Amino acid sequence: MTLGLSILDPFAGYRAFAGTMPGLLQRQETGIGQCIDISMFDPAWVLGASSVADKLNCDGPVSMVPRPDSARFICRDRRLSMSFNWPRWFEALCQVIEAPELQTDPRFADGNSMRAYGAALIAEVESHLARRDAADWAAAPSQRGVPASPPPLESDPPTCP
Image (cartoon, rainbow, N blue to C red; front, side, top):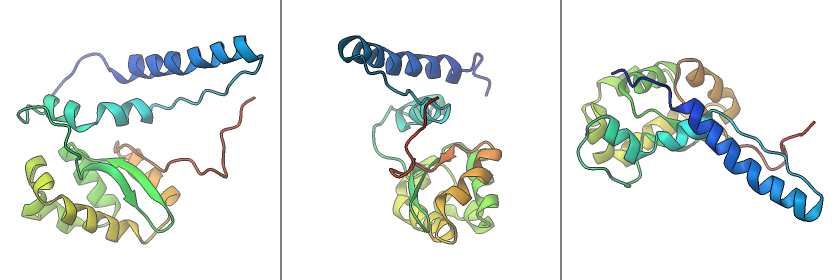
């Protein structure tokens, strides 16, 4: 499926704009600015939400039901935000976590099956992710095109120049 213009770039720009405006207002009112941290993962995560993915996949009516294939999964140390709601992403994830059996499991054959067996899917994925820390897992899925990122730690606030 070809979607034409990448929507991530303009949407990331919108999110940067939406984050910059309150910072400018605060600076104007208090004299203190803000650090704005925008990543491409943020818009990818929002656009990967169930309603958008269902619509693009022509999976029937748009739903706001949580999806087990787009969530924050528990690793050894903390959660990892990850989305594998496209078949090629699920295939890549199964290779990364060394779980080829998940690809042939009929419970996870397609998006509808994954949602029907959501708890089992999450348990299976997390059983593999529990072997390593979230930061260790994040790079490999991302290198294969699977949106994956651990949330920042409170002890690691973004630094501004």
